Amino acid sequence: MQHANPQFDCSQLSGDHDAVRETYAPRMVIHLSLVPRQTVSWRVVADCEVRAHGSRVWLTRIFSPHDYWMQVGDVIRIARGERIWLSADGDRPVEVTLTSEYVERRRLLRRRPLRWLRRLLDILLPLAR
Image (cartoon, rainbow, N blue to C red; front, side, top):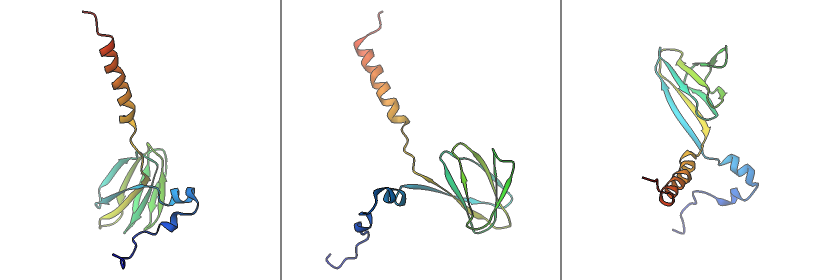
């Protein structure tokens, strides 16, 4: 394996750690295929960027009185909790991507200590019968 090409050069990471974190931050990308003459509703669970691919896309937001006509490559930033409606403009299916930073789910980790505390209290303080 002496002649194998390296797949990743770690020397690229030896610079500024904040810049590295921004560059290599884990991201989640959701691909939506929009069928012509159908509207899709989506509630955004994390701040994201919506990007149109292939053709024009109609987008409307719950907190905005304006409609947006996104051309190919246009990006609109959507805040967490917003509801958006998307539709393809034309007779062909269109792809839309929603890109956000990966958000770790921490609710499960918060519940476990409470569950352990309840079990400990059940063992130490049994109910009087």
